[in-house]
Image (cartoon, rainbow, N blue to C red):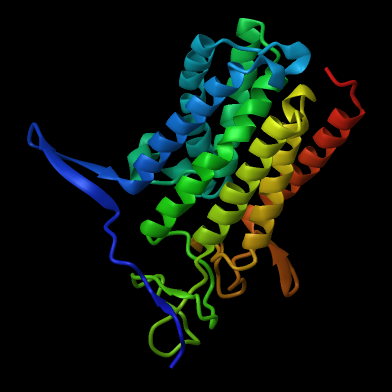
Length: 296
């Protein structure tokens, strides 16, 4: 019998409350966003209260400005994440059903789109307030892995975004017909817990490295360093995990069972890998530029 880990009996909903004839449910995924944003906000506030961490020993923002920036970041995450999912993953479907683009509660968010949304919000806010936008980007990139860590754990609890079938002893038997649809497997199908792989790489390890560099190595003084490292670190982590992550259903066809977005014979790249390559290139270029720039 194949060794595997049974999926833990955790409901995606933490609690449900009846309000004015409707039921309001707090889900783990929503809580991960809320807690991730709050923890990130508090760490950014703590960082701007330490002038010695910044160029010329002067923080680019006040704590009050950080609170103002928080609204822009939330809008960037939601709008960018939703539009990214629409454009990157299901453009044909939403072109035929444009009203469903606004139905965020139905699910469908893209990290790469959310990242672009936050970058846009960061630049617009900084320009409007006369703040060095690259310093703002650095500190936001430093705290972003907190949200990634919590979000990927929530993905695991929701039994979504699981990996490909595996015979490894830490494979997880995710519930649901889709997760158990493994043509070459008899009985329960165990899959890579790719959500937890991403939580460890993109969240825990990357976050610990960036925070350590900022607080112990003065990385915030060299504008662009943490931004570049985040882009590069996330891109590499996501590219690696994509090898064992189940492809999105819309890319899987009889001629393309692996679900490659770009296919070259028997090889190919998933959409996640395709979107990660420019992140890695941008991150490497940013780190190189920051290293050659005069320390501020």
